[in-house]
Length: 284
Image 1 (cartoon, rainbow, N blue to C red):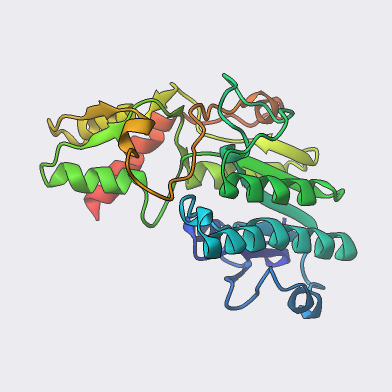
Image 2 (image 1 turned 180 degrees about the vertical axis):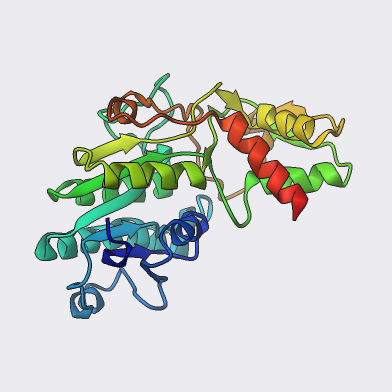
């Protein structure tokens, strides 16, 4: 696979940053350089040197998407943008790999597989589901559905590490269940699918390992940091009680990994990756 034939969309986000590290010779653009919501701009862009589009662009402010302005932006970036890229990919015979989310489901199923009907609870989830549908209509597509992503930039692990190092004992949601997905794991899966020429379609991808709550993850972070801070459990409803503009969240975010494992890919345990991540952060 020739890196120079790859273009990374949304290159400044957590995943985009990791993709740039993996494919340093690829073209990397953010919305200032290429606005995926503007079809005319996309049609004027020179696609002749590319074979693969990696779409890491997304509007990810889940609560912000519930506002008037946020709703518009979420649909533009998460739905219209992927639909535009799908059209461009089809016209130019390109492979389009698009990143999706567990928020396209309501969280009422114990394990979400790739064939589960969409049931989003929020504007964000609905906009992402619309993007999935658009991308899945073209022949050469990969939709990689993930959850609880951790990479460079602001994220849950860094926030909890910061609180822990300050001696703060946080109260953390304990009834949302899932597994962490490190951007390193996403990049590894993306590279595997593309290099192995795996069948096109939708794949779930998270790190493997024990299913846990955000509170459980926080305790694990503190244990790995060697600190004795305590964590108080709280339900999602209690945590957001009295707060306006909060989007509903899926309680169960466990994604079945059977389909991607059938390709020969094997997911790494999230605890192992978390330890590497924490050690790296501490050494900075």
